[in-house]
Structures are given as structure tokens and as C-alpha cells.
Length: 206
Image (tube, rainbow, N blue to C red; front, side, top):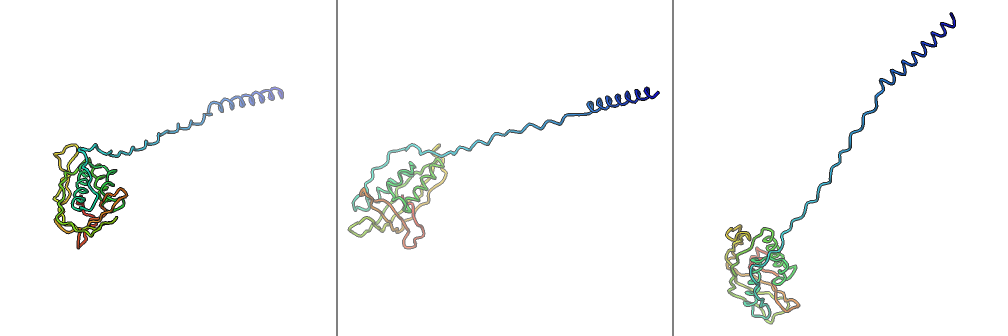
């Protein structure tokens, strides 16, 4: 009897051990797989769109800006400036205005705005009535000028029949015009100011 009991006890222990192994194996599950990482492409950089300088519609007028025949000098400078507003090109501003001067800054802004808006000015030349200046002329000349200019329409380059704005008329008034003589001996605009009020720093007579 003791041996039988001992055998049964061993058998029971063995069965329990086997059953325990089976249960453990059956109930064990693997860990959940981690989600795949989300890969996003970096945003593409925006391309800067800049308007190019348009091809000139007409040839530029010849500059006659040497000497002391002031009506001729002013008429020539303004004729070229008017052409530049009709054929905008910032690189040519220095032909009629001294870099760094108020007129050069104003004209450069006007020209760049016209390029950006794909437009141009239909110019009307200003009329210079009286010009007085001290003589002899040196490298920096101040002229007293009576001048006027009518309003000028700004039209679309894509369709010249479409008017998109205008430059205000310049009524007949007295102006102080400062000219600088360059190393090439040519005169260029520096300032154009209303007199005597001086309400506008640089009047676009060009």
C-alpha cells in the first residue's frame, strides 16, 4: 500500500505538472507590434517670383545735359525721365538722377512699381516757363523754375486700353531744382522742391 500510494502521488504530481505546462503555454500571448512610424515629406520651399524688366517699347531720347543752357538741360532730363516711366528699367535711373538723391529714390520707386504692376505711363512732357540760375555753374547747381505738367495715365502693359491709375497733375508753380554734375560732365536731377512752402520733398516733374 505504501508503494501504491507513493506511485499515485508521483503520478498525480506528474499530471499536475504537465497540466500546468499546458495551461501556461495555451494562455501566453505575444506583445502587440508597435505602430509603423508616419513619415512626412518636408514642405517644398516657395519659389520667389520676380517681375523681369520689360523690353523697351521705344528707343530712349538722346540726352543733351551738358553746358548751361538750362531750359535745354531740364527739357532733356525730363524727356528721358518720361521715357523711363513709359519703358521702366531701374538700371537706367542713374542717367537722369544722382544716386542717393531724393529724385533718384522717387524715380526708382516709380519704375519698380510699374514693373511689378506690369504697367507703364503714357507721359506728357512738363513745360518749363522760367528758369533762373546764378552763373557760372559749378558742380552743384540750384535753379529756380516755374513749371507744370498735366496728369498722366498709367495703363496695363497687357492691354494698353485698360487704365489702372494715373499720376497727378503738377500745377504751374515755382520749384527749386538742384542739379549735380557727374564725372562725365553731365547734369542730373538731385532735388525738386515746391517753393516757398516746400510741401513736397520731390515733385515728379519727370
